[in-house]
Image 1 (cartoon, one colour):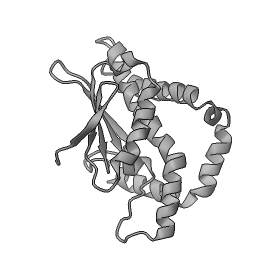
Image 2 (cartoon, one colour):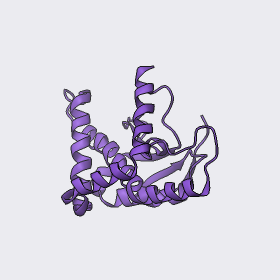
Image 3 (tube, helix red, strand yellow):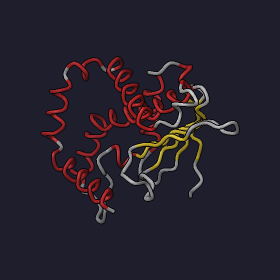
Length: 195
């Protein structure tokens, strides 16, 4: 694995860049925006947020993020996989033209931004679950997943109340504008799950 570059700290958490295809400095503000939304005590024991271009190929599904719990020796780590959050934006075989790059930039600044923020909040939710869990409930993956999703939704909806209130409108607009990207993303996810 390539060694990451620590591009700084925000709220006592290292942000570590493992990307090659994406400009991490551009995405860093979205990571910081997500961290600004959460209570300081929820970041306790989080050591690194690792930013990658892609989800690891050995994962059973095409994940958008990952969580690695803290131990006695090391703090927790949260992973963000940019390409999966952005509906597989990276070109597969051929370079993109100017129009495609422009439309990608619009997508990132609108819906893509919020996918990244929600994913980070979700992965942090797993961490908060571990902080609060008892010995009996710590290994309950279903409970952890449910808690993480509720945690992310609660903070996201408080931070972006218009998105919450008009979810039907934003969701409809997203599906209308990006139906090709959504179809491509679904196709890639189905293929990865089948393997």
